[in-house]
Figure (cartoon, rainbow, N blue to C red):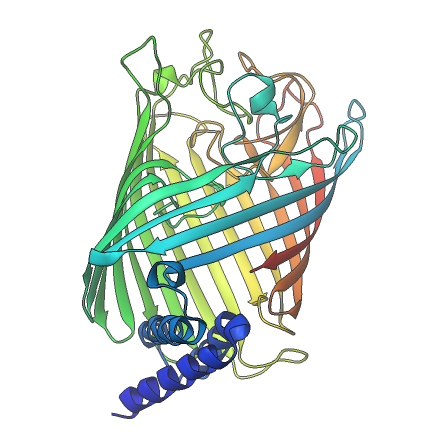
Length: 448
């Protein structure tokens, strides 16, 4: 009863606050709900219900107050802007240090329709001068970054998301949806598998079940189109499925576990000249297609322990240990990858900060090179065999090394961060050449 009364009281408070100060509703409501979760008053399920109830209350109140029609107030807007300085410093004397300024801008619109339908799109920046565009294979699919260059030339805006979603299942214990189009990635993985900016094209089905008040099971399955070849009926595509279990054991301890299978079909047609090619690492044949098939087994685990307090940190202080492992069962060598990491704190709210360390290892043929984190790269003195890209810096597979990040939020909407990558190739090109690359990123990121 206490939990029910708390939820009703908080929903009423948040809805009335949103009607009184529309511009501050989203940030203030989320901040208050997060604080209740941190103190163990609410669990994750109750927190999400509160957010949904607060959103409904705000929409109704604001519609009456503003006099706007329902179709206008049913629209939701969101976006982010990030400015970045980064430097590249290789230990190979054949390389040249590089510095650049970049930005990433994204703006999305979502329309909630009757009968549990949702339609949305997101616009984003993108680099017309990137490696993939230079090869004539389109913009980089795993980056919205745009470099400051070409004498302040006008920059492009492109379609980053375009989807329709139906969510017919929404009971206290069950929720489920089907999404079609250029969609958010339904799989929860580290960036060894998918870059965070990757927005696949295809169809995805998701299902969630509350096993109890503090344990949630999730399932996702999807099919992605990787390319459409006008002169070939064997188009490459990806199919995958994943199971997850998220648990909150008490106000101090929470865990997450996941396992999944991903497989690329018709990978013999993933040739450099046919699909966007901006990364390196895979073993390729004379036809420039990957030599090995890709059938991935993936697992991850995370443990979070929250201290009651910590110096110079407001509220409970989370410490998270995480790791993942992947194996491409279709390759005999260079077929494994893993990461291990620790995170202290959590930025994103005013006055909060975090510090993290991650070690990464990703074999050359452990996974398709064009999906993985584009910021994690190493130096190649000469081009890899049958690669469309020459020597120099490159992300993808066939690398190992360290990542350190620090971040601080002076305001709810702003995160300042600095990150260092120290990566080297597992198999150098040429053999025994120096491949260590240091990459530094300094970011200022705003969300709205």
